[in-house]
Length: 233
Image (cartoon, rainbow, N blue to C red; front, side, top):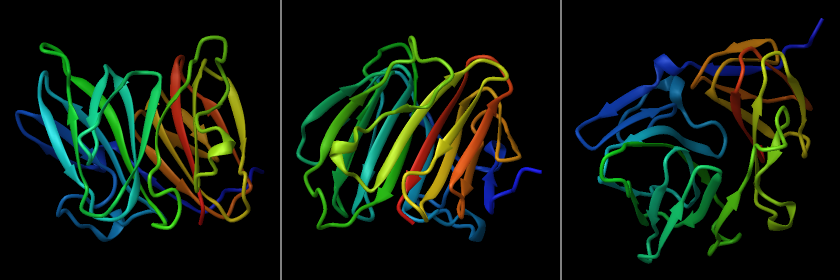
């Protein structure tokens, strides 16, 4: 029998939704004044938002704690303006990571005049003494790498977390080996459905796991996409 690791599932339909004419935001954890005892941060993962930004619109985000700000476009490109006013275009197949100090303001822009964009926003707590000026855009490509978890951040950067993403055919599986004993593991289903460590996960569900050395996953639909985050515990 497969051993079930301790964990907590975050169902897509139980996220906090904030929306207006500019954006629609689904927050897995407590964010922007919303608080629930069961939505506390998972270790250093303080923010995990699934956001839609309307055509030609922009939003500003003020960082509350020193963190690595991570943007993962799902549909369409995103124009990110950092606290120094420098802009970066981040497209599908790219991940933007920027160290941000407490109080920093970032602006996210939808460059399309007629189309909305969908992206993931993560904030991972940072040690202010480590990589305080880090900003980088990483690329990945599913072509020729179907049915595997692709490492997004090269090990030479030595960040306190790892990111992987994979697109799978139905019934394809993968085994993720944690890099560091005692690490925390978080998975998010961008598309399709998976079984992960004995838990059934549907589109936009998240799963926090701890106390494990490896994580076994199987796609239950075609073109299923999962994002995996490993963090220092």
